[in-house]
Length: 202
Image (cartoon, rainbow, N blue to C red; front, side):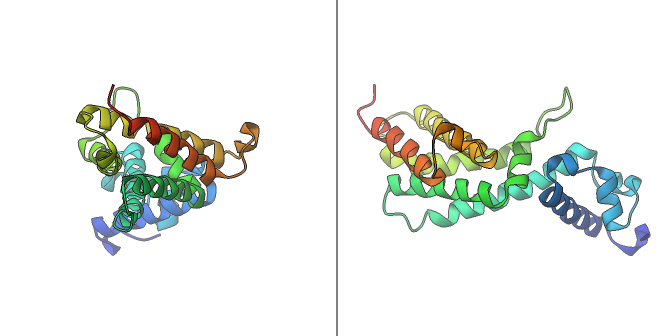
């Protein structure tokens, strides 16, 4: 087993996050434990908790990495779209593809629950907020003069629908809904919502 002096605190942190992600990819969220992570990097659980506050902190750090990757994938598409509608459709496609290609890490973002009485740290909330911000930015040219609060609400409505499709797809339950193509379903959802959203404000 490695000694604490073999690696710096930051090196241990990165090793632990890499090991934890590998465990999640291979075994899912339910397979993750501090003991498994510590064993994978050759340190004790005690050493692990000198680097992370607790298991919640470790999981939030993993989820933050996942959110960063998803945001980067979403942002890459936005410079190539011709208009707001295409930008929205591309964002939906990216989200669906990400969930399909990395289901365990994607699912852990939503499966993890903090211990009772604890709240998400502000730095983590900011990562979530920027995910919605990129959707709101794509919606703005289509907003037909609607106030910012309605645009923000629309972004969350659309993403709630796309997220629901992802849950069905990752759980192999789309067949129950009589749907074959995840992307077709997502495109239909976004297109039909935008058809109403781009009309005159009520």
